[in-house]
Image (cartoon, rainbow, N blue to C red):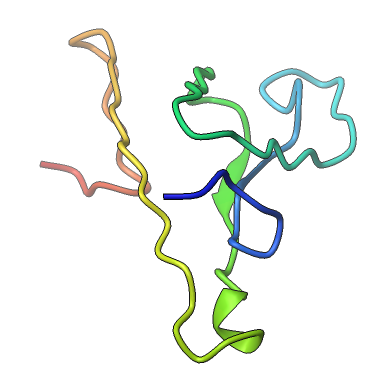
Length: 82
């Protein structure tokens, strides 16, 4: 596997979006073995993997996604109400 690239579709973040001090969008490009830890309340989104536009095979993004929350926190927007 390769390091991440902008065209492979990194997760975008708006730093400080959980406060009233929003800043511009950042696209952290991670290298193989890197770890990214962030507060889930920060506005974030996945972006499109555009590698298939440059070659017919495309590039698979391998991502391990874990979420930890206190028992009282219920994430309902992405994972439903159950």
